[in-house]
Length: 535
Image (cartoon, rainbow, N blue to C red; front, top):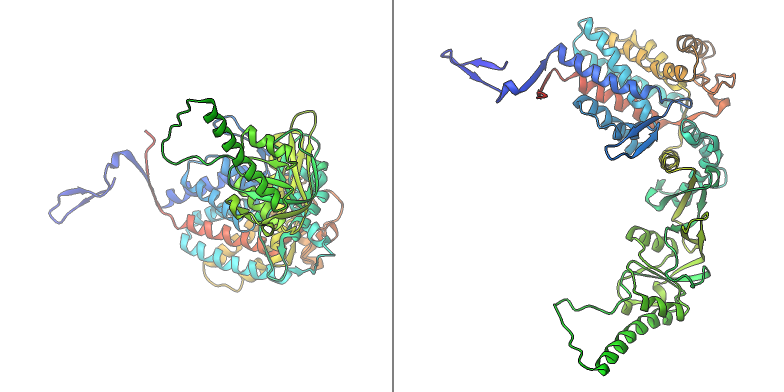
């Protein structure tokens, strides 16, 4: 396979253990790579758009995931082929950067690979195809800038943001209450956004879910929800104007670091030891009372003695609260996390208008709501749903909506959805292709054809005649010179996406085209695949 001869005619081996490796080279390698990429795109093609289908994925340990979020499906699919892994990376990078459009970007890359296969069969060199795609993607990105609309919004008028988030949510399971969820997402983002710096820290938005109730019960809490209850059942369940001591030190007597042994040979010694221990607890509780705290939140546990004392001294407490939650509580209430009782001062206490414990259903599930905080820059979205899978999918859908709202705050340009932007770019590239002499012209036209695959998939998934619908919308765009005509997926009767309020973010769309082109160029440039054989 990889045998070469030196100047004396003696054979020598280039690749070690070559009988255990398989090798594909030239056109065969490119075709194999292209078919692997197309196979991945074909899986996701049916879950594109508002009428897209969902996929059910079962992991090795029996966990079931139902989703139509491209990034999630590919993450869970456990792909073995190296080119298919590139497609997984592609959707992941779209998810990290934009948060939305993870299915579209893979479908787009699959369509480009399909077109490049035809060009390779015509004998065009892969590098020339890649260059043509690069030129076409530049034209498409410029055209998107040209057809984009800026819209103004402020803290009082958030309707444009809500409309764009609704477009994102319309393709998910949760589309029946997309308006309320979009509003929740926008309010949450605006609560933590820094509008002057145009920046949003999504870590300040905590998304919690609880099985039970219905999707409509999902709510936004300007504060923090902790899945804990009061440490003693007789402690008050509602505290108003709470002053919160946030501790990372345990309510226990200090333990010596070295090995130790206590010999007790008389009752008096035992009594002394017990009193000493009780004094420790007393001092700890007293220190919390002295600084004026009315609620203690502790990262560690405390034994029954401390619990009993806290209860008697009317000091409600919560134990075993995780580190991340403690940080969020500290941010929301404006408190400081205190590592030692000696450092407790009144300035380090957090303030909250209301702390209440809420129980759910007939089970013993209780949660602690910390609301009306001094600094409401940390919020919680609390999701309810019929089963665990619905809640997980709602979390993923809300993550997409939050990312879209964040992108719009960073850059408030939008293009219209429903495949209208792709059709417009396709027409622009088709028109510009004549200006390019040489073989690249074929690749540029192929790119225009590939862009049509997204509206085509949307029409197909919506149960329309794909080719008829696409050509009708295309001719309407040319006739009316209106780049807002797209596929009428929801069967409203109008093709104008402005009237249907279907928006997408400009940076999301541009990123899709650029990322898909980059990956396809990379796949086209591979002409030799050496891999270990299966046995």
